[in-house]
Length: 568
Image 1 (cartoon, rainbow, N blue to C red):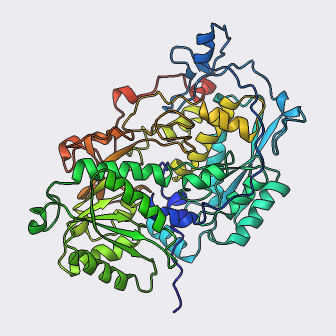
Image 2 (cartoon, rainbow, N blue to C red):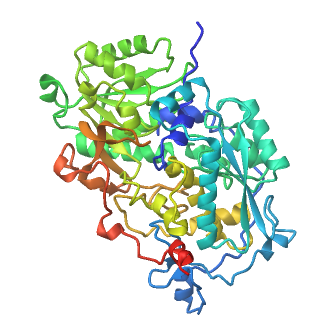
Image 3 (spheres, helix red, strand yellow):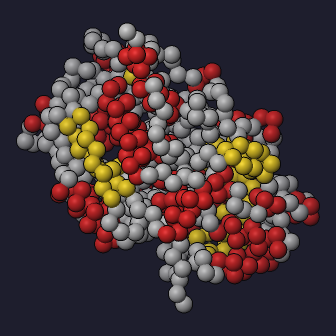
């Protein structure tokens, strides 16, 4: 049978839905990075080198430093109106001369510049149809200019040690799941462009990141969608995603299900008879024909068992648009046969379109437990589902609480710097790689290599508090996660769907249906989920889109360079 090519969901979601990714995680997204346990051809890492003093390190050692105008000495952080501002570093550490040392030179780094490729993935026909329908079809040129807006902001305020970042656009030469074209693109980035790093890559193959790692080039941002930890470890220090790993997300999911749902009545089900029953969980999960992702699901199931959660049935599926409705029919029948009250969705954002329609056709109205990955936790997709079903959807999201553009710091830092907003509506996605990249460069010091970049990220303080509008970021060993953490976002929040809520979706389209963030987006670190009420379906204490930041999350009121430059 001829299989219908599905939309490349990773690229659609990560390029065109402006939500912090930080984002996307067991099986559904692991499907996009199959083969993560294979050994990679990775250039050997060099030994450690001296790093610049941070504000806290200097104070602890009693060292006097002339911190300069870009440091807020009352907070010890760079003086920009951004929650994620890194610690100040000693600006006298160097001017980039470390790049001239033969034993520390890194590809794409000179005394004066850092070369960065910006990978521009080409949408296929189905993607283009989605983009036009969602109204989120930003031009590649517009997105490149927005990337440059962020470069200008970070260069003006973070320490780059005398270097300018030169962006070089790279148009993808093939579809996002083609290994051959992805490898060819990576070779071009490493040899013809001579880049130190790439922002993004083809989302449905590891070939691009693999080839860059083999050639000693960083791949920052959504180079692959939701890489598992084994993949990241084997390619360290070269691959830096903006999303939590599948294993980390599964920790949140299992805690939420075990502490908040298990052993209680399925009171949010749409069927009164089901709502009176103690919850019986069924899992609907993506897989492929060889069962590549059985092991990923087994890990999630093990975590559920530690929470004393029993799975009544699991239903793997393959997304084939030609027979998706028939697959949904069989899936719903299997869930009903197992007397499932609560369906855990560990799949892509398209299959629920068919699944919820079929559930209504069969008169089946369970709870829908969303695991909040691959953008099943966005209004863009949520509005496409059968609303009689999705009114009973809730779960976990790794994304921050949505904010109106006029208070969103990721937009306002550009306004603060230039007086103009980001050009592309996809700015929240575009800034992710840059935020990570410039933080690592800032904390790495003048001797910039992949190894010092990693060491720089590991220095980012993990002691900052959680905040509902923002992610808690850390890298390295901070006892938040077992072992070494190679991804940024650490925390998660609770969400529930309101089919009657009106407002814009993530790409600005007005309409009905939004996610509520329970308890105004209160966030939980792993191991700190409460055992009991977390505000599910309590509209009075929830938020859909924040119109103002909580007082503790508001940035300092620093003078705007745009206002200063406009004065006579």
